[in-house]
Every structure is written in C-alpha cells, then in structure tokens.
Length: 535
Image 1 (spheres, helix red, strand yellow):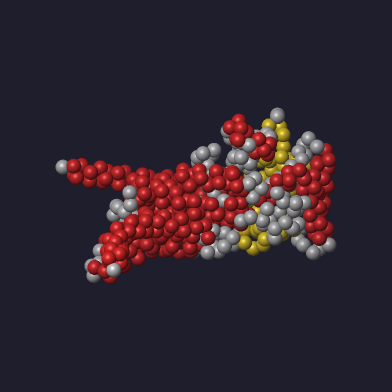
Image 2 (cartoon, rainbow, N blue to C red):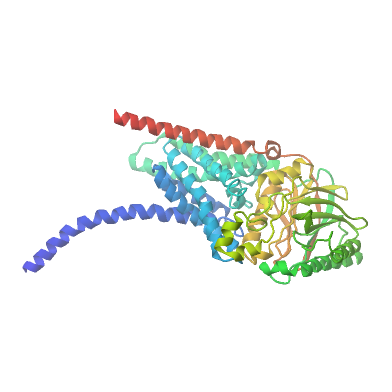
C-alpha cells in the first residue's frame, strides 16, 4: 500500500510538471505546422489546378501565424511558409538534373519569404496592419524578381490568379497590384474572423479595427469588378490569322539537346503538313507562322542544310515564319528568334535578353564545377544577352517576342508593347522538364500578361502545351503534351495601352514605399516602447 500511495503521489506531482512543457511544445509546433501547411495551400492554388481562391485562406492562416509575434519568430515562420510553397512549386527544376539544384534554389528563394515573414510580424502590431503586411509581401516579390543572378520571379502570387476574380486588376497595375489585392484580401479575411471571435467573446465591437478588416476584403473585390471594363478581346487594328507550330521532340529530357536536327525536321514537317491542309482548303491560310524556342538549335546561318530545311517549310506555307534558333555570332551564342521570309530568307532577328541562370549561363562556374563537373558540362558555353526589344513586322502586324523565361519578368513583356507590339508571342521549350507542372505555370503567366497589356498572346512550344490566348486571358485553343500539332486562329490586334502598360514599374515602387513606411513606423514604435519601459 505504501508503494501504491507513493506512486500515486508521484503521478500527481509529475502531471503538472509535464503539462506546461507539453503546452509549450504545442504553442511552438502548432504555428510552425500552420505556416508550412499554409504555404502548401498557396501552392495548391497555382496551375494546373484552378483553385485560385485557396490563396485567400493561405494568407489568412499566414496572418494568424504571424500577427503579434516578434520579428525573429516571423523570420522562422516565414521560412517554413516559403518551404511549404516553393518546394512543391519548383520541383520541376530537378526533373532531369536531380534534387540538388532544386533544393538549393528553394533554400535560397525561401530566404526572401522568411524576410517577408519578419516584416509582416513587425507591422502586424500597427493599426491597419493588413495593408502594411500585403505591401511587405509585394516588396519581397520585387526583391526576389531582381536578385540574385537577375532575379527569379517564378511563384509571384499574381501568376496563380489566371482563373480568378481578381485578374482584371492586372490591367490596372500589373502583377504587383494583382498580387497585392490577393494578399490584402487574405490578411483581411483573417482580421474579420479574428474580430468576430473577439466580439463574441467580449461583447465589444472595435469599430475602427472591424472597418479595416472589412475594407481589406471588400476593396480588392470591388476594385476587380470596377476594372472589368479594361479587359476586352475586341480588335482595334483588325485581325490576323496566326499559326502556332508544335513539332514535338523525339524524347523528353536533357537529351533533347542532342536531337537538334530531328527537332528541326519535326517542326518543318508539321509546317509542311499544315501547308498541305491549307492547299486542300481544310484550313484557312495563316498570315504568318510562329515556331517555338529551340525549334532550330542548328544555326541556319552557319549550316546550309538547316537553312534549306527552313527555306523549304517557308516556301511550302508561303508566309513569314518566326524561327527559334541558337546562333553563334562573333564567338558568342544567342538564343535568337529569326524572322524568315519565304522569298528572302532571314530578314530580322531578336536575341533573348533575360537569359536563364544555370540553364543558359552558369554563374559561379568555377565554384559549381568544384562541386559537380556534370553541372558545368550541361552549360559548356554561356549565352550572351540581347540588348533591344524584339518586335517583328509580319504581314503588317507587329508581333512582340518574349522568349520563354522572359515571360516571368514584368519589364521584358512591357518593353515589347511600348515598342509597338499589337500582339505577343511567347516561344518556349519545355521539353527538358518532361510532363511536369512547369508548362502550366508558364501558360498561366502568359494569360496574366494578356490581360495586363490587353494583347493576344500565342504560346508556341516544342512539346506542349501550346496555346492561343485572347486579350481577356481566355485560352481558345491548346495542344496536348508531346504531340505534333498546329493551332490556327484568327486573333485580334490591339494598340491601346492599359494603365498597367502606361504606369510600368510605378505601382510596384509605390507598394514598396508603403512597405518601407510601415516597417519604419513599426521600428519606431518598438524603440519608443522600449524607452518608455526603461523609464
């Protein structure tokens, strides 16, 4: 009996000792798990899924996790949110090269999200915090789009909204305004729920705070509805019939690069097949034809056999072709679009300006080679950058060229429109990423760009998904993946400029300044609070 009594007594003493420890661990683990899972929820809102609205609860939970915490806690929780979001979003970067580069990219990019988390935690104590916090998020995206190595804007919140109600805001202020509206609405949603719970518990309504929460939700929605008239697919400068060629590749993966002649032949063959259907009266004759990036990785200026293949295809279809080639000039490599006339041959070129680090050039080559020589072998010679916008005049229409990776960058697309482009072509090569989500993520970017600048966007891709996108962001035709196919459609030409086109970088600068103002206010308030405590 003595032993039993002692055991019971010890049990009574142990329970209150362990209970606080358990609660402490729960308080630490629950926010951490919620941060990672809300990042995962944001990923699920991105294409190929059409669950754009999940971005709102993702940021609502993120706001709950960060509100009222120290900046140090925000840093860690922000990093977990970034990992939850970016790890699955960017898994395609490791499809052919293994997990090393994929994980390295995510680890680096998540640092920006961690800094955003610290900033959101800091401003979350301010009146009207959803406004400041959403601006901090956009400031983080602005930084991530510029550094390191010229930036990596993949995963901007705006790019997950191609099917969403907020999309018209892209025409107002581009991806920064569209992304800001989504994040603001998400943080505002949390604030509304938080105040509703508080009011039910205390019986007191904090009207100013409630107004902020409601406005944070309502203003983005009302703004998107008000922006609808900016979205139109009406022709302003007539229409043209466009053909986008998807020739396909012999097989997916990095070995694509060793199949250069086959890829060229495939695109020429599909163009000639289309020409036969036009001659038979089955399909309307296009005014011009668009081939994808890398459709002729054999330099047609240096190789007569490649030139002959393209000449034959151009003569067969009888209209100009924009050919994606790899060209060496003065010892330098260029990822080039070549305007090929059926009678004159090559008459104009556009050299890709925003080239892809670790894909088209290798930063830190000696350092990376010391880690893994296979990685340096994949990029034996760096590509050089073009310096001028690319707008081809094709049968009287001005077609702006935005080559693949460039579609992720605000400035590259806008420069073509301000240079006179009446429509945009995004020639791409996704063959090295197999059947991953990469092609769908990039297609969503092109849909956002269509609305942002009110232009038809064609997306000719080597292996899919190729598509025709109207100026209102709707896909009217698309191909499957890893099939040879062609899309032919009459599309509108437009020359008017949206507010987003005219304003350019100004909305982003304004939001960065709002973020800076909020952070300055938060730091100042913290310093004053500490001084008052010392007194």
